[in-house]
Image (cartoon, rainbow, N blue to C red):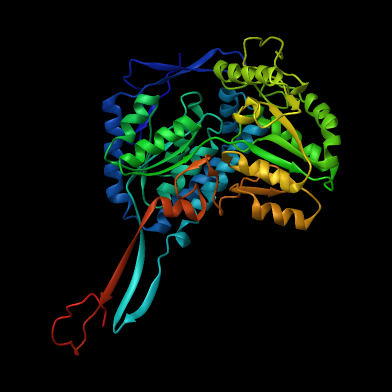
Length: 496
């Protein structure tokens, strides 16, 4: 059985671990690899490697750091299909979806290659007589990234390229459910000419994460995952006086106004709700129909019901299996609760199986109408191919509904009215808003800006906020004496 290696100090080495986590093919649950639970000595080796590398890397000129990222993004593009194939085989994603996962990560690496202008400080000449003040942007040290199963290429690429381009070194703890993709990313990073120790990749579970969170050498922590884990990581990191950015759960609403283009709305909602088997933190899991647009619900359900799950290399497959039996069980439990609590199940995918792959984690597309805010299918993040349809009388009612939800990751509105769109973007308490765009994930020269219980921290991922998260600002106030030296001491803090 293939045992996943770890990357420590520039070398891919087998772990001395005695505990391993099975990596399975979600389509049939056959074991395809074993991920080690890193030993304490391996964790220490990774940390020491990153600390040593930081001493020299922080002094490397910023343009030279950017050139590493330029070479890296070129290699990622050259190996796009290979990475996507590895990703599909261990996650079950369709090949087209996997390629999108990789590409959205490449876009962040392109921004990391443009880091020079984002590392510029500020200068003011003569803040006082013959005194100048200027600021410098400097790296923190060793940073940690903890990434989820659902985007094993994109989300690691959200983190370590920006952190390293800013002058830091990095330890990546990827999801134990699909570690092969991040290891391929690490392999290409070394090929791009990255010095040893800049990026270390270790594997494991809660024990390994907690060890790193409590280690003095770790200066900043980036996390994407569930709410309970995000809260634990944020609290543990900040209790240890570390910076933390933790992206957690979501319940994303799409509001459909009666003046929207019906065909455009239906086509977009199908993919945004059940695409990737609903395993996206920005998936649309609630469609809020305003007024007469509720008449479109039966047709939407029909179209979603026509989407067929399948294997990653089946070009006709709309999406693949869920990541694990546990994920499937949770989705089936919520579907059953939706029926019990009075929602109308217009499309029921709970009995779906794929011929020849009956042991896989399959759930077919599912659509509920008559959903109420107190139902568990609305209260909880389902993270499966399930869409909840709700009906309200007005835009104001839709805004009130969305704002009452504890999550604030993403939302969208479909409308032909500029006034309605402007009111929605202004009044909605959600960090990322789409106007006639169902999944408004911003390109990486902006930042990924979830709100409320979707994010714990102050500075978000990628874009300018990532540079601020991974750096400190040092301010220098300088006077160079000339022949006119002032007499006597200055006994105040005033600059003269």
